[in-house]
Image (cartoon, rainbow, N blue to C red; front, side):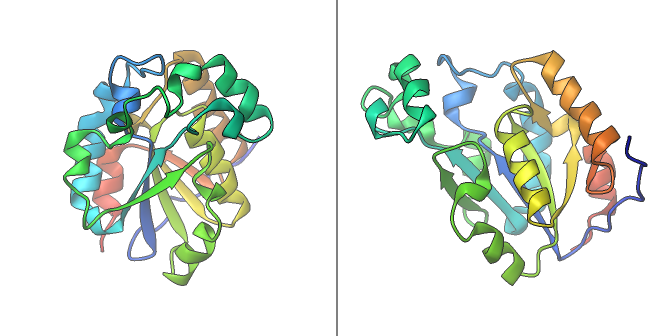
Length: 202
């Protein structure tokens, strides 16, 4: 079991990475995340305060299942209605309260779960002097999980405002937060948005 560490310092070396807050997951699609609407005001609060330090990721499916790689091909064979040849591409856009923050916030498109699947993303952050990532969005147990674990491998410290994370599954959402607190406490800090804002000066 991990031993809780001291809160990470937050300043100019901190970047807000907001995962997949898109219409695709906010609206009535097969991938709808009901909790997204509940955490959206909290994410707007963070992104609005730190827009210049914010990167929004967008999950982008392939045009058709056979264009996906490896096991993703089987995944989209099970979800053909979520490929771009059938999907309204406007659903890929950020939800409106967040889309208005771009620019100065930036957007990073990805075709798989982790933001770090984009070549050179980690190196680009490090060139900017970033050593800490505030991660928000969804889903806690899918794309957030993949991004957090990759970020840890790249040496970033992670701050998770738990009231700015969402999932379709309460049980796995709660299990992941427990995992971060108990097994990754030297690299991941689970906190609240109020505490984050109180500490982040830039």
